[in-house]
Length: 178
Image (tube, rainbow, N blue to C red; front, top):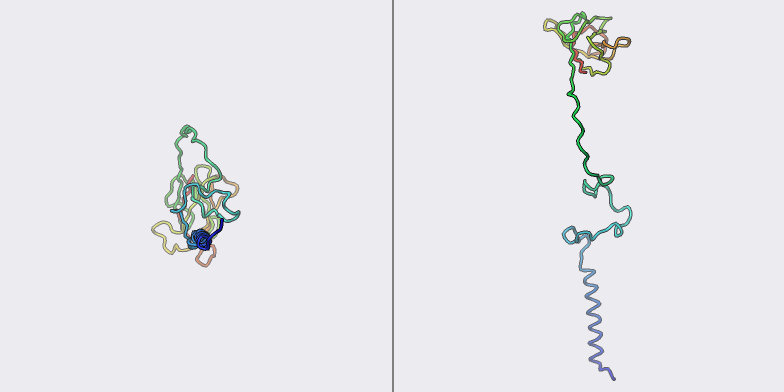
């Protein structure tokens, strides 16, 4: 059988057309034009992602957990209600107590150095203090340091200072929370 020139041209035109369609399909997509909407569920798998291309920030927050969580266990028994003890003192610059709660004594140990003793152990308590005191005292600006008093589990040491950081007698408020 002899091929006619028209048949050869038609076959070549068909091959070129099919080849160009394939090329057109591949090159018709603009760079970065495939997004979430175009992807089917489970279309991107770990085998299709090159190592090092996904960062933790790229993942949804629920996917950042180290592993799957198991079922929630039964709730434990409720503990005893907690108690908070608040001890406090307003101490004059002389070291005397102006008013207080849970305080057994206070005293001035030296210029700007005081000891406040409470009616319980304050070793594991939090201390907060501020310069300022009884209404009759004036000139109570300055700084204050609160620390545990060595040798007495019920005592707190307070140092009051001028704004220039020199130890100086100042009235103060002290709060101890246990």
